[in-house]
Length: 155
Image (cartoon, rainbow, N blue to C red; front, side, top):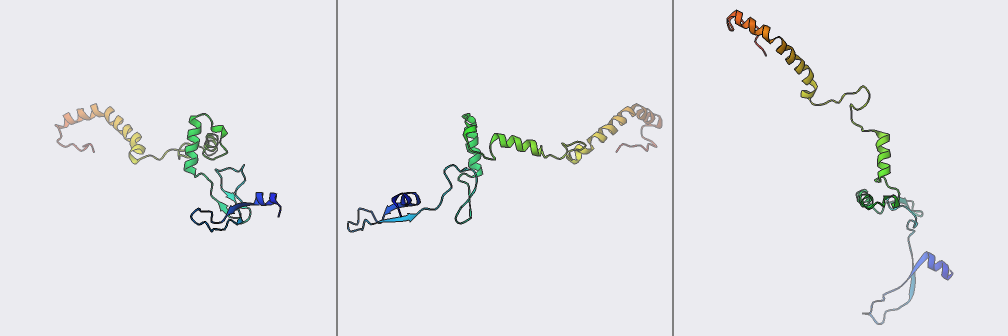
């Protein structure tokens, strides 16, 4: 194995180099390094290990990615970050693709609302009609003798 191959594929370390043991051997041994992701890979994305085929988590979690994007946006350097789903451009693109995703915001749809919200229009209409018919009802009340024989008590 040439010296160049040794430098690229392994790290030279000395065994037991502590100063506490003066008789320790200083023989050099080589330890194979695991193939880490390449230097130009995205730390925001998971990667597949080339030898084992197993997936490794991203260096930065989604929460930390969001924090980094916020800080970069505050300092106007967001475009220098690698691609992440937490970025502003990706967020606006996703919002355009998916829409608001609120029931009732589409064409011909209505928002469900609470029961009192759904029935308020009809109640206000009934109340308006009752108020318009109130003078006639008061007149009838007075003619019948202030409640004697009255059958239309309001509910």
